[in-house]
View 1 (tube, one colour):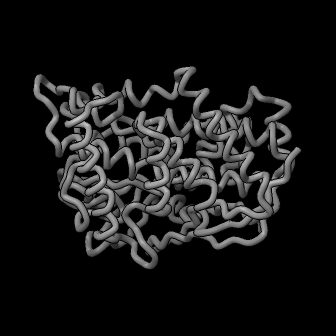
View 2 (view 1 turned 90 degrees about the vertical axis):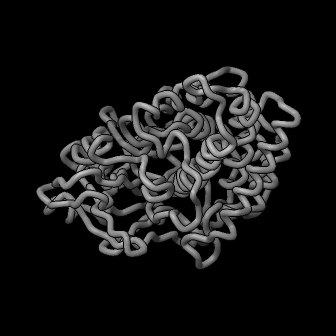
View 3 (view 1 turned 120 degrees about the vertical axis):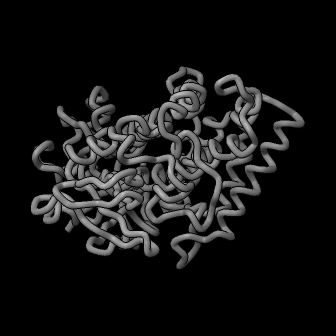
Length: 385
């Protein structure tokens, strides 16, 4: 079996029932597995809310490690729109030429560095560094800050052997508190200062609201980008012809990005809290229970995607949900897409082949299901053109 392949552990349950079940810290979750049900559930924010107790819609639940509401992620309409309208223009900046030029320079530099090494551990040595450096552009903060974020490791809420680590989470929270205070004393052109100077519905944002936006920005785009980049490197190692194709057919790069994001689904699922007794897939769920929208399963739904378990770089029809769907679609999607697009272009123009030396897979335990989401580590050799 190919090392880069991600199997679909949800197929049998998706076909037979349409849902799965898992226990999460004694707060069970009913997992929606079909694309139509996932999209329908994501759209129906009145029945399946995000604005529940902070941390509860995340799987695994984060209620024991934070009480700050992530904004606008854990807010429902109509308030959600006010927050989203405030921050969305900032998160669309990756479309600007100056931003793309800086990101291209960053990615080109790190790929050149990898080409000069005998071996590279991709997760911490490449993907984490790339993600952290790119985040300095998104926050419009100093490039040197990336070194602090890299020092935290690949997970901001997790340490070795711990699915959720409150002490480690506090490192992020304390850091954000300090950065907010710094921006209050010396405002600049960074995201902290932007939020401090902003109003929502005629009121200045509170420090807690600012912190909620920043926690989302740090946590929401970390593991996901690292997984997408690492899995793509593994794929191109086993499919050098795909890199060659992107080089010769640059017009398919955008479709290739969407296909890699669909196939790898860097985030398996996201929860919601049920507001009233209802049914999902003819299965009764009670008010205040949890469901999850399983993006990874929906992306392999054979009733929608032809050859769903294969990577088709120029896939024509690709309504994947890796960036969510509906009201709460991913705020950082533009940034993530730009990272992936520039990475693919850079690899295609600089790298001849990639050799996998050894690896350790990262397997998620979802009770009924076990899903490979990527790698804990993978050592490779980059070979230049």
